[in-house]
Length: 153
Image 1 (cartoon, rainbow, N blue to C red):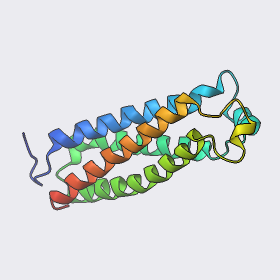
Image 2: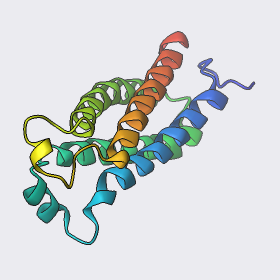
Image 3: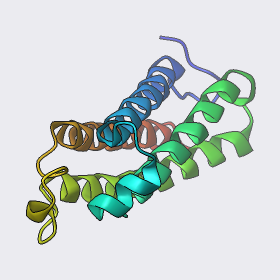
């Protein structure tokens, strides 16, 4: 195990960031998969799933932030300000992913009271799997933040 001068174990952090970015891509695919050939806007209007846009926005935003942090971690990981930004982005990502996970769980559970009336979106396997992946991604961000905290950032 190799450490940078801050003592943060980057051989653990970088795979967490990589896994988080890969899971985000899978979540986006699963959330957007049921649309078929229609646009996101048409699907949302037809199925009353407006808050799926929030899930898509949260997941894609934090995937981009995580990818940027991962790319810069090899060059700037010894800079104190970068480590602070990394820790704060991770903390905010935890809160955002908790919100996204709860929203996705709501839709995966056939979002009462509208879900049963719309046969197209009730108990979608894709959304159930996306919910599980959202919670796993939240756990990855918690682990990343815990490692940041333990290393004294």
